[in-house]
Length: 276
Image (cartoon, rainbow, N blue to C red; front, side, top):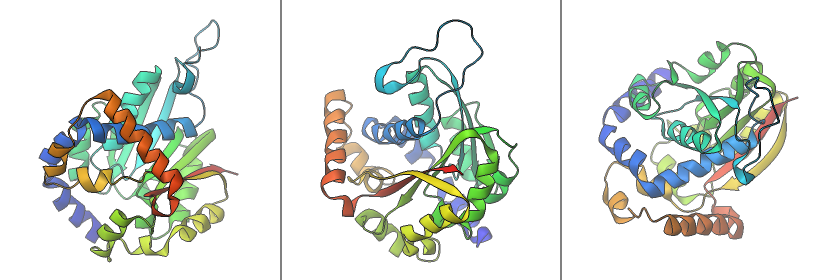
């Protein structure tokens, strides 16, 4: 199955260079990925001190500490959309981001390297790369659209626990069966996405088997950002190309309201877990 997935994604990402450039520059899609990154960084431990003397870092409201350092590892990082958002959000927070990404597809990492210059990018199976990380070397492990691709997510989570520093956390975004866009995508690719159809009980069992405490579960995202903006045809990227900050803020607020009002159709279940 790994060879099949590697071949599929190498061919898939090799065709996506132009679309990825559009996505990285698209204000509305950037806003979605920035919200993902905000959730990831807010769910992790506070940024680490860099050993400076003087008073503690001052707070910037929701943006968190004004100085510090956070080490984030993202297996299954793909073309680097979340990595680029993490870099933007960390810069706004005044936090130094030390980013490590891994993906089965070398073609994906070729794209990610242009998205996040200076990142540590590693080619390989998520479970194998994670198992090879230095112990206690990461503060946050973010796994977006990953667990349902793994034959043994509990084994991956155990390796992630070993890689996490004390207080570190895993933040996993997993597509929900009730989400129309993911149901459409995955029905069309049942071999590649077969574990998706096992639903969120599989994820709960994996966190339990790996010895995690689930600190929080929440639903995230309702509007079809990824259906509209990830596909290669640019029609939706051109149609919804606004860069007006007020409009983007209203769309983001609408997305949150719809997620709260109609959670059955939300796109993602977000799991925040800490090794027990």
